[in-house]
Image 1 (cartoon, rainbow, N blue to C red):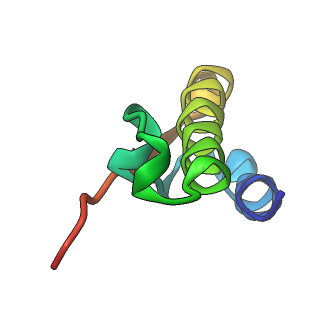
Image 2 (image 1 turned 180 degrees about the vertical axis):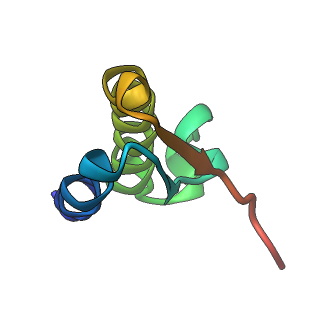
Length: 78
């Protein structure tokens, strides 16, 4: 919900200006599946996949208003 609310708040200011850029933070976990022995990652990976899909949908919806919506997806770090 937080990612959506932040995007909506930013877009309300950017759309009247006719330009702007929103960058969401996802994770490579959004594109992967894990075995049970890797731990309880389902809530995390599911929420990051939702961020990716939200980003794609908002990019399509708001492109005509001059907004760019993208996401970065960092990987794991030891």
